[in-house]
Image (cartoon, rainbow, N blue to C red; front, top):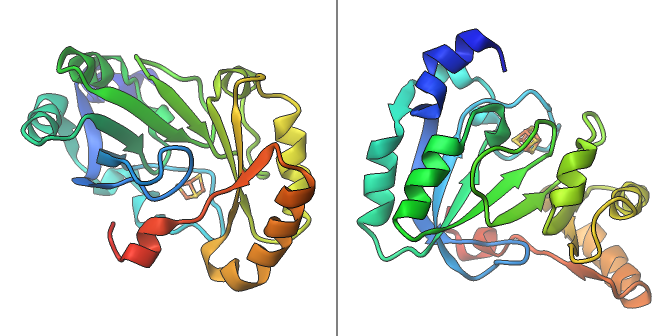
Length: 210
Ligand code: SF4
């Protein structure tokens, strides 16, 4: 991140907010848990199948005071926060996460791992992408490795990443949504043969919730 952007965002006291909402986490280790989502704009990873392309251009999302975001989150019964994007690690997250922690909230982040992590984060969900592989430091910090599988060949990419995470990291294979029917049978057989992997399904899409 350039100093110019850092100054513009007042060191992270302003962030390009796309949307924030209270819902149920649909996928990965925390699937089924009520959580307040904070979605930040900006991503340069460029996944073809990205279901949040509207977030890519951070300039569409004016810098928003984090105190407003935190007040909204804290006004609800949510106990967990999911910081997502876009790619939320593009921004300094110390002020936001410190303020959320002051309210006693648990903080999860969803990242492709292309930038260093900042702030107080309780759970790192790393979803690595081939075109911009994750930083070694984020692989080492991941609590959850969630690899999107579009073709069976992506399983090799998943294994490559799994060889760099810590022993406590949970491993998930998640079918790319538009290829769900074709890929699920492949993943079922793979997980049965390699039971350190679990399968993650995007439950929120079946529930028709954000
Ligand atoms: S890293 Fe995430 S937000 Fe960025 S393009 Fe890929 S899926 Fe979309």
